[in-house]
Structures are given as C-alpha cells and as structure tokens.
Length: 168
Image (tube, rainbow, N blue to C red; front, side):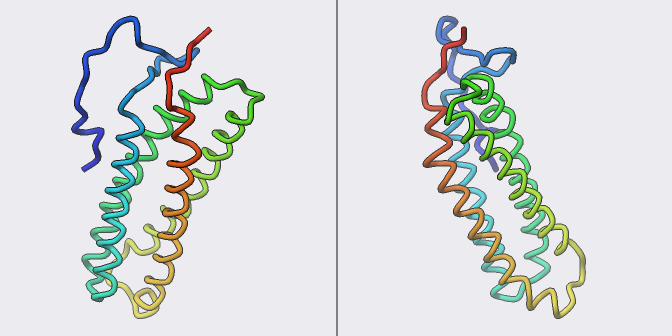
C-alpha cells in the first residue's frame, strides 16, 4: 500500500511549521520521500500487470489494473493537495518555478485522463481477441509516459519543495 497510510509521525516543533499562504496546508518534511515511495509502488504494480499480460493471464491483468488505478488516484490526490497547492501558494506567480509547477499540474491532468481511459477500456470481462492483441502495445505506451513523468517529477518538480518556504 501507499506510504501515506503508514507514515511515521514526527512530533512537530511549533516554531518550525510553515503553512502555505491562504491555506491550511503545512510543509511536510516526509512528503517527497512518500511520493517517491509511491512511484516505486506504482512501477511495481505496472510490472505485475505487464508480467500477467505476457503470460496471457488476462483476468489477473484486469484485477491488477483496478488495483493500480486505486493507487494511482491516491497518489495524484496526495500530490494535488499537499504538493501542487502548497507550491502554487508559496511561489511568486510570475516566477519560472511557478510556471513549471502549473505546467506540470496541467500535464498530470492529461496523463491521469489517459491512464483512466486506458484502464476503463480494459475494465470489461471477458476480453475479446482484439483487446488481448492490443493490450501490451497500449500498456507499453502508458508505461513509457509514466516512467518519463516520474523522472521529470523527481528531477524537476520535487526539488522545488525541498525547503519550507517562509510566508509573508
């Protein structure tokens, strides 16, 4: 399961809590590690889907896809609330960093929509022969997009959250 379900709570020091302006969202020192752990979990489930598909165990594929979808939605929700909202409220709206965050958030909406459409398309049973034939090619496209996105998030987006931002 995702790491945010089993998060280790550290006692907060009252003087170190930083909240994004006009929100109740506080800086979370564990957030980036949790999001990276989510990435590992998502990739592990993706590989399980691929393994089951290559073995032509398509009923297992369908079940694992639905599990992947749940994990993916939980990850996106955490990212949207704790990362994107925090950063968009802390960064100067005319800064390059702000533009990067806004673009990545918009791009993630498109990726999320594509992943959902893919999973929903294959969330029927039984699959016909055409679906079985097309599945691996489409899965590989989704996998490539997710791998590229994960790399970009971890290299370009997550470092923007690196230190608590002082509020005015």
